[in-house]
Amino acid sequence: MGKTQGHTEETVLEIDMGALAHNYQYLRSKLKPDTKLMGVVKAYGYGSDATEVAKELAVLGIDYLAVAYSKEGEVLRNEGIATPILVLHPLSSNFEVIIDRCLEPNIYSVKILEAFISHAEATQQRHYPIHIKFNTGLNRLGFQKQDIPTIVSLLSQTESVRIKSIFSHLAASEDPNEKSFTLSQIAAFKTMADLLTVQLGYRSLFHVLNTSGILNFPEAQFNMVRSGIGLYGFGNDSNFDKDLKPIATLKTIISQIHQLKEGESLGYNRGFVASGEIRTATLPLGHADGISRIYGKGAGWVSIRGKKAPILGNVCMDMIMVDVSTIDCREGDEVIVFGPHNTAHELATHANTISYELVTAISQRVKRVFIKSSSK
Ligand SMILES: *Cc1c(COP(=O)(O)O)cnc(C)c1O
Image (cartoon, rainbow, N blue to C red; front, side, top):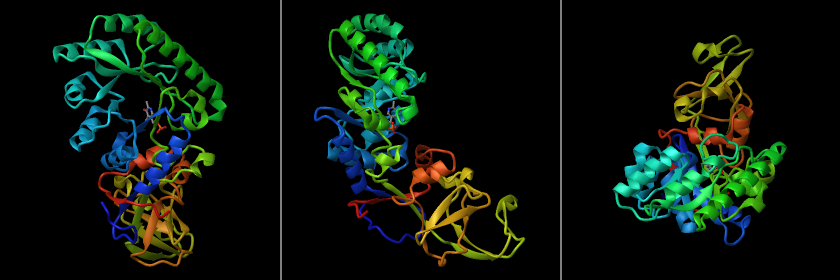
């Protein structure tokens, strides 16, 4: 922690904690005062650093954290994070770790409910918190409405577990063309959550919104919402992107500059052939660092001295080459792959993917540097 922002001498992912705080406050401003906020820190905190992000979110006052797999929750507990943690995709083989580290499982099927109850009973738990997930149209994980009697019957026979929340996940909350589908998911969720609540005889937290849901369907916040991408600075919509700050800046430097003549080729498989004189810069990051081959052959670019330098030819494992013919730059100069200005969203969209994929792909080989206060 604490290294100052500035010129880099290697490839680094700079994480701006001030931007994280800004995004947290922005999302909070969209919520009613008593709506709880769950911060989703799965996949290394969307490629940034789950531990540092979770610690900062705890300081900011986050109510809950979520990870995808129990292993990710275990890491947070080992780092001393005491905030409640929902495990979105627990497997039966994880139950020991889940209970040992006080992680709270998403229970999404009768099979996993039965298995978790028997584990909780075997370890003499009382009212161990679990979260019931309904499938409302994503068709990925979750109970169906017809499972409710089975859930109620299984729970009526044990004191070992207790439902802390009931939730569902939206399939297309960022897409205005799917508004009616999203509203039908929200309605189906409410029906199922109410039915289960009445039959259980006690209340639990209800939550259905992810980041785009918070921004587009604020009336459906129930008692809690879950945000991942918004905390990292993306709103899946230019209207919201302007109010959020990307927390991660991927920086590198120019290792070498080459002059190519007409007809000369560049990189593996001669992926680029110069049609005239051209100046190229070689950068020390490649597909092993998370810049996939889809960004090659002009689909992606980096920013050098504020100008776009398109990626030429094929992305190599450890290097990319970019066109700097019109950029006044030298070896050792700083390169921004993505950041607050040339965003991961723009770069990903241009290559037909999404910001989520680009930011979570930045590999552990890239050093993370944390900036305490925002200067952006
Ligand atoms: C990943 C995930 C989220 C976070 O979604 P964002 O679009 O990043 O806000 C929320 N809920 C569930 C179930 C998820 O899997």
